[in-house]
Amino acid sequence: MQIALTGTPGTGKTTISRLLPYRIVGINDLVNEGLCLGMDPERGCLEADMNGIDDHLGELDTADILILDSHFSHFFAKKAIVLRLNPQELRKRLESRGYNEKKIRENLEAEALDIVLAEAVENCYQVDEIDTTGKTPEQVAGLIIRVIKGEIRFTPGQVDWLEDFLDSGWILE
Ligand code: ADP
Ligand code: MG
Image 1 (tube, rainbow, N blue to C red):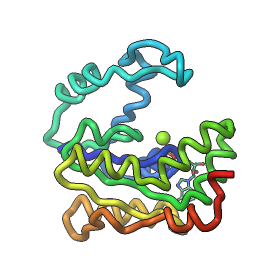
Image 2 (image 1 turned 45 degrees about the horizontal axis):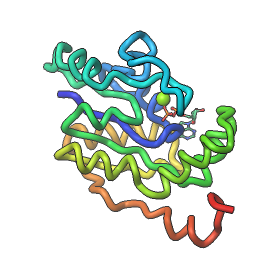
Image 3 (image 1 turned 60 degrees about the horizontal axis):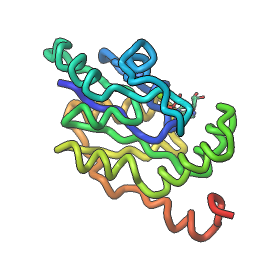
Image 4 (image 1 turned 180 degrees about the vertical axis):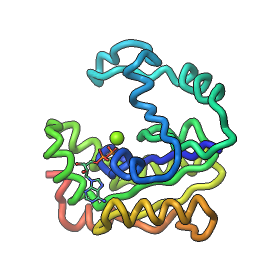
């Protein structure tokens, strides 16, 4: 079974996936190692080879649980767990990553507008969303394990950053 661990960049996917007792496939590593179509001139980063990644994942043994780590891993799995983070917290993380202001805003807007969640709901038959705000990576990992075991569900619609976003204007000038 392949399960997408997805969410806007900076929400904690890679950190938390390392705490899970499952095999992890880093989709971004696959892209960097050659499953790409070259440089995307507009975005200044590698363009993922979606068909190539799909083929590669199809060849992996699926008897075990495989966690697909990437902000677009929900395009490759039937089940997805979407990590959410309050955009004010997300801004701090993206700043400390050294992202430029344009890239920070793009990602904060995507988080505020539930873009990854909406894509996951459209592409997957089972989606859970976990609000990681104020939780440690260990706490979030514990929740993910319980979701995978079928002990709890976090059906989409748990978070709504938009009101906060409109009130405070911390994304748009
Ligand atoms: P992603 O893989 O989703 O882009 P990362 O796992 O790289 O995100 O996390 C980005 C940063 O946030 C890292 O510096 C990490 O240590 C920190 N971080 C991740 N999860 C948490 C958390 N639950 N609480 C506090 N900091 C976190
Ligand atoms: Mg990551």
